Image (cartoon, rainbow, N blue to C red):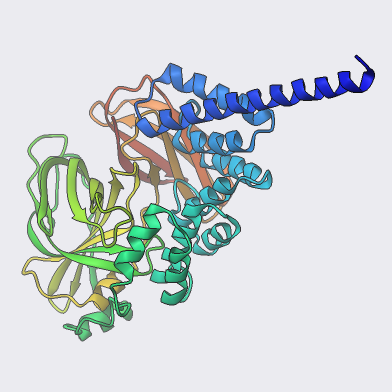
Length: 448
């Protein structure tokens, strides 16, 4: 056999070997994707899966690098880290992986974890990606005006030329709509004076003073009626409202346990909750609400897990309004729900949607937790206006004992994120404490 024949044979063997390796890699990636989809995670198996994908990523596999970002995003096999997830998605995008650029856009679209919500960056990454779901979400952004002027024609054109099942189903629904209704403009203003008072910052805020466990202000207990107000992910555009009722019972034990009932539309839930310093942390509360539009005909509702509610009572022209900023989780997707407010009165006084939008300008709580409830990893996020001495810790709610010291030192102004990874923590209720100089902030979190 001459030299040329030998070289040709070696090339064939090498090509077959590379094809076999690629097939093996594809098989590994598929098995890990199936493992993530099923959601039945085992700590030992998750670590094995993570190391397997990390090895492929380090060898230059773009799909594995993108998948590594998903493992970091979901905290599978490694501590939960949205910063590392973003880093892997960027690396995979530079290697030409279109799912990675879509995944980056999705992080910014909803502002998951400590990633700041940013429609501009979501639009940028969706536009860069050729992934079908990137096009699907791009169409939604144009249709609903998320960070861009509403453009119904452009949205329908994108969906028409994006032949995946999700887009086909959504297109069929949107094509039936003759016009895009402006939720704020279509309703008759029932209380213009209220809206003007809110816009001018008028009205007395009845502050809820910090209380010890087992004490709840009378201004909160009892029956309330009004509206469940759902916003877009930026919290600046009201997407829809539902009639809502809330009943808050009186404390039944020294730990501040109360019974709460929330009804939204036709769905209601009654569960135990704990009152602490203006927050009601709800246990296993869940309501089911119809989706505004669906991407699949078999999935027309979403299950909202209700986690906690921060209260403000505001008096305008003699009427007390109970404002509840609700933290929820979309159980179907295992991710946080959109910003939600309950705007309620004792009498169920009609409230215009413009007034509701004005109420929504209330600020978020200082401490943000992700996810809540958590299983293994918990992200603690807050922003300092100035340089300060900060102590962060995790306390046992019932015993009051310190469980974990997270940080204690001088921190610069800006955003800060701490991760608690403690698989040995027992299920139950814990208190996250963030002390900034001499001011103490607290928030309850549930460990599943």
